Amino acid sequence: MKPLDMEALSTAADCLRALAHPVRIRMSQLLLHDRYTVGELAEDCGVLENVASEHLRLMQRCGFFTSEREGRRVYYRVAEPHLERLLDCIEGRFQSGKAK
Image 1 (spheres, rainbow, N blue to C red):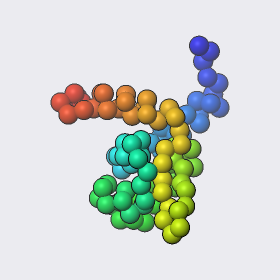
Image 2 (cartoon, helix red, strand yellow; image 1 turned 120 degrees about the vertical axis):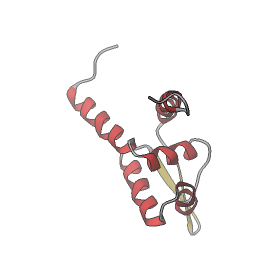
Image 3 (cartoon, rainbow, N blue to C red; image 1 turned 45 degrees about the vertical axis):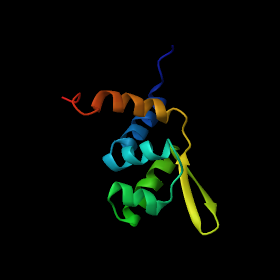
Image 4 (cartoon, helix red, strand yellow; image 1 turned 30 degrees about the horizontal axis):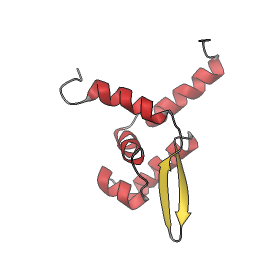
């Protein structure tokens, strides 16, 4: 496999920084299995809805999440197919008892 150029590596680093927050990782875990509204995600993550919205916007800008409107509700879901493999690595490394 050919190494990535510096521009691609810079973009990758930006997206990894966007993912590097406990709330955004948790949202990613949830959204890999179903779609959720801001309120549902906020409740599960223990944050206010406006804080959840900011996290979701950041993840959308990186292309990790997408949203779809159904009536008055907006549902979020994973848009990046490789996100599941990234989370598999994180979960495999940091499951309880493995992190050091």
